[in-house]
Length: 447
Ligand SMILES: Cc1cc2nc3c(=O)[nH]c(=O)nc-3n(C[C@H](O)[C@H](O)[C@H](O)COP(=O)(O)OP(=O)(O)OC[C@H]3O[C@@H](n4cnc5c(N)ncnc54)[C@H](O)[C@@H]3O)c2cc1C
Image 1: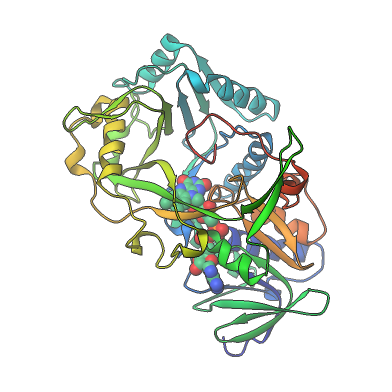
Image 2: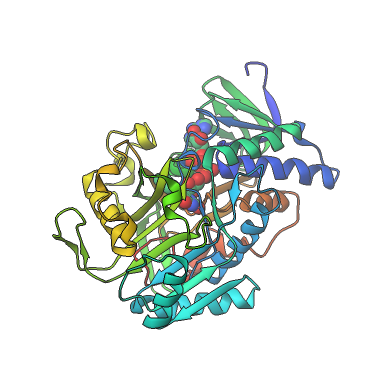
């Protein structure tokens, strides 16, 4: 590393976005005769997959209420499909199963999926939904469900294996991936353009920087001398709200039930789609019958041999602290502060049992190991993909993003002058211009 003093392109972060950008940039530079993978280095303060991408549940879906998100996800799903083996991608499909308060939103998702030719089936009404689910799982028992959106594509991928697959592809193109180098700042010329990336082992001169920092987005934002707070225009009233914090952290709740993953096979012995249920039915503890909640709740789950059981999660919660005082490191399961507790396991396993009888009585098999992690969210909880200071592309996915493997491809093309309309709705200027994404009735911040 000490010998690297210069690289035309520097990518900061070896997660899904950094690695995808590296691989696709190498290909795009070559295709347009502007360079090769040898012109790119990826640097990471730790190693490949040491951020959110390495602990993500790995769910890949198109189920988004926002048209721009849906189109972007359709593009990403197509990228996953290019090499399922290398990306360790399991195209089992995805089901959004909802109560009446979400019926209309999900119907609109279905209609718009049809419009972009994204294959899905939509079932409506109590009886038909119940029958549809019983046809897949004989023990389905969740009540109060009035819509089921079954996406044929999507599913999940194995987090670290897919990153390794991307890294291998990037290295094959000549990209160098360097671990253990921490970015500490950026040095800029009089016009504000970045001239070099400052690291704990010295400065590296560059022509272009891509930052893909995941949960460290705020730290990178600060190093780029971007504002702590921003102004946002209300698209309906035109009123501008000032001093809105740019970053807020949410704590993601995920865990694994240590049963045989095959327990979740479908009636015809196949591996099932990823299941996501949002409902306002009262949820009772599977351990002692006490009421857990009578408010809206949501869970997702899938059998996963990599995690060794049924893996999934529930709605995240906001970390009730100013972003400045949130400790991102140590990250994920290493964090003493942001791992899930008993409240999560009781709720989640009870919710599994609420949906499918086969999970009743399995609470003791919940894997009591550290899990979960935090994500850095933008003010509207949607990504910011934009260029700052002339030559710094920031990929801040607001924690939507393991599934967004295609963003790196679009960013690479954008850098090489082939701009895509798919990225336009995610520019930073949308806040002051009031071009915000519509908000759904889901209990999750990223639906
Ligand atoms: C528990 C959990 C479950 C999730 N489940 C899903 C899911 O099922 N599906 C989905 O689509 N998304 C999911 N997400 C969200 C998804 O994981 C993230 O949105 C995505 O992985 C972010 O990717 P990234 O490449 O931007 O960042 P990361 O994967 O976090 O990579 C950032 C890298 O930057 C490095 N870095 C940071 N600061 C510096 C620095 N100063 N110098 C050098 N390197 C630095 C880090 O070491 C890290 O390796 C989940 C997130 C969490 C926390």
